Image (cartoon, rainbow, N blue to C red; front, side, top):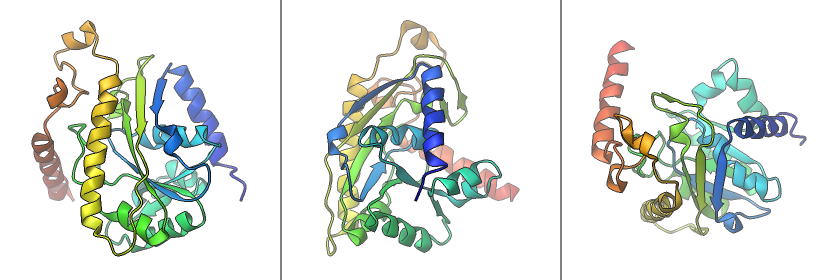
Amino acid sequence: MAEVTYRPVIVFAKTFFASLGIKFDIVGNEHLPREGGAVLAINHTSYLDFAFAGIPADRVGHRLVRFMAKDSVFRHPVSGPLMRGMRHIPVDRESGSQAFRDAVTALRAGELVGVFPEATMSRSFEIKEIKSGAVRMAMAAKVPMIPMIVFGGQRIMGYGQRDFTRGRTIAITIGEPMLPTRGEDAEAISTDLADRLRTLLDATIDRYPVPTPAELADPRGAWWLPKRRGGTAPTLEEAEAIDAERRAQRDTTT
């Protein structure tokens, strides 16, 4: 099937990133398959993670990634037609069975499927609790699952953040494929996935540009770094408390 929407969107995204002077630091591209299906299990810290996480696959044989995203994005008058045109996969959180089936079908057809197993963005920029869906998809489709870290997008577009300062770095680290098989404990493998993502996150931060004196002079400090790595982001526990408060506020207004 001709990609009449996806390819032009990629060209636009690359042009936009170039206009911002974004520097991509990508390690582990050799772990992405040049053909055949695979689940990309990606951390989630920014609204641009979809676009950034597709860059490594584009560099490996111009492969495309079908991302799983909440169905409300597909109902939006602007993003909806684009998401459908790129054949991404809508997820209804009230009933995710159809999304699971669609993802497995795409994987069996040789597609790369991008999944954010934390489900929502991490305010702490640490790895949150991992859902088992990515593992179960890989099992059902009999394809590898590849952990991936994207770091730096939170500085551009994240919770309460819109900053298009030129010259930001987006660091991406792709880990070795995991091969979950039917009959194995999906929850145990999900725990292993979380551990691998944490290790990859640390490796990514290790090579990420250190905060400049001007950034450290900001009253927020290095807000985009996890607290345990010298930043001022909330801890996992503090971030969960913020998320719980936001959810409660939404519940009282609906």
